[in-house]
Image (tube, rainbow, N blue to C red; front, side):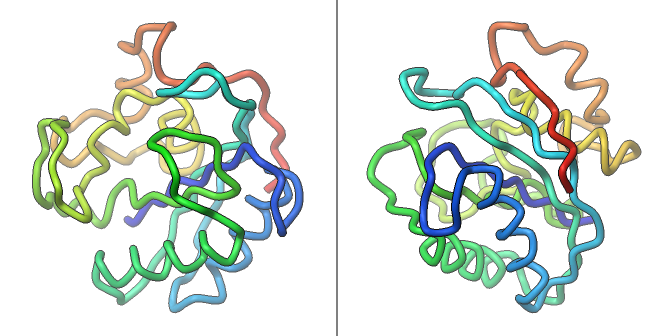
Length: 174
């Protein structure tokens, strides 16, 4: 199972953050990717850098024959088409697309340490982010973290409420 996280908190060429996520889901399905299921779009507090607008977040479950780095290149191109400019870590953005899990592959550093690898799988902080775990629990309740071997619900249960981008609202538009 391949899981892709989607996030946006700035209006861009594709519209508001919610509209951007809906468009991004459609664009994903035009890549050499098959969109199996998308979560509801949720509104969440910023994570990592608090002084920015609220985020719209979702997770997509997809299938592809592309290898992880090829998929990442396609996702980055999609971000650029949506107006993404990489200026600062955890800063506001029109669209953020992350490979959260790629069929359980474990790649590069897994302790969540900062390293220079282009891609770390599973996503090194996904287990600390409610805005990732809640959508995963919605669309893939049996999924288990490839390293920690816990479900999204189990990981959510141990999250400190002050961390992880508190979920504000569930839109359910997808």
